Image (cartoon, rainbow, N blue to C red; front, side):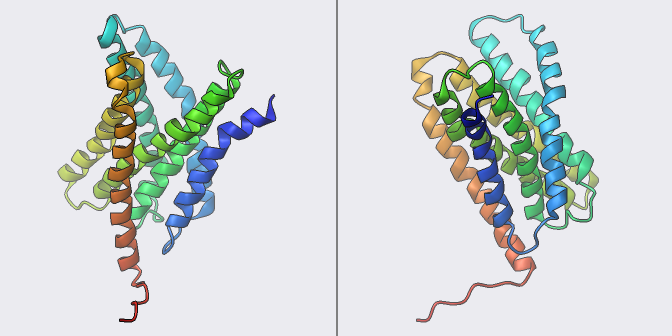
Amino acid sequence: MDLRLLVIAVTPAIALGLAAYFTDRFDKEPALLLLKIFLFGALSVLPAIIVERILMYFNFFGGLLASAFTAFIVAGLTEEFFKRAVVLRIVYKNNAFNEKLDGIIYAVFAALGFATIENVMYVLGGFSANHYVGISRGIFSVPTHALLAITMGYYLSLAKFSYNKNLEHAYLRKALIIPAILHGFFDFILMANIPLLLTFFIPYVLYLWIANLKKLNQYYKDSKERCNISEPQNSQ
């Protein structure tokens, strides 16, 4: 095993995980629970691969439709389903999930577990001869998993703290469907082999960063207010 490739594969997820952990400043989640979420997120790669391979048998399309089916259904819907399932099964009803920022933190850790194993498979597998694959995935793919998890966690928290069951179920659906669609667009831009479409890749990635950092900042402020912590006022 090439140790350098392994470092390239796991470093982005570690960095993003630490960033998420230290963002949760005011009511930190239990470290062991975060580790559990991360590990189950990593394990969820296995059933995701099985389902993806089964779904590919139903990809009877050609051209752009084949790429769209792979991007939105095989990859987007399947992967986001299993990442969401980790949060729902392990922590959604846990007492530690007691504020809206928690939904984002848990979803990010599940996604980073998934992304770590996926990245190791790419970097140490079929692309082990090309270090740039690991670097490019570290810059784009792994952070995108985390950004999509912010969207997922945003809606999971709205569901968790909704007192209306119908509204809760609506937000739970959004916690799957919206990340799956965003995931699908990311993959479709790369899979479609349309040069003009590729010009939208960087703007789309920037959109994901801006939109999701706004969601994260919203819940960060909620957490701060909930814990009655205020920053010192600047003297006039």
